[in-house]
Each structure stands twice: as structure tokens, then as C-alpha cells.
Length: 67
Image (cartoon, rainbow, N blue to C red; front, side):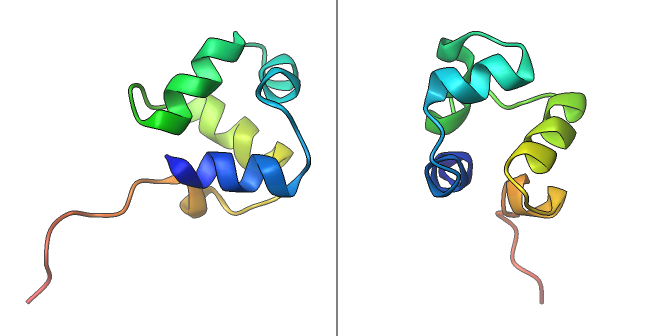
């Protein structure tokens, strides 16, 4: 979820700023950014709103190849 980090920095938000806006701990944001954990659906919607991006931009890319 490096995309969260990129978008957060574009918005000039620290991990703590984003965590406060969403209502989670700063460590939760760090875990999302490193891929240790993934945000739940309701948090993804909040992230998309705060980071001014479409929800799809926060979803992990598919690892399967289409033939």
C-alpha cells in the first residue's frame, strides 16, 4: 500500500495527521503503508475522501495475469 504513502505526502499530511483524521493510531497508518495490514472497507472510503482520490487507487493491484 505504498500508494497511501504517496497520496498522503502529496496532501502534505504526516502519518499522525492522517491517523487523527481517520480515527486510528499512527502505527496503523504505518502498517498500511508497509503492507503489514490492509485497511478495512470503511477506512478505505475515508482514506479516499481525505486523500482526494478514487477508491480504486487504494486497492491492491491484481497479481493474476489476464489471458
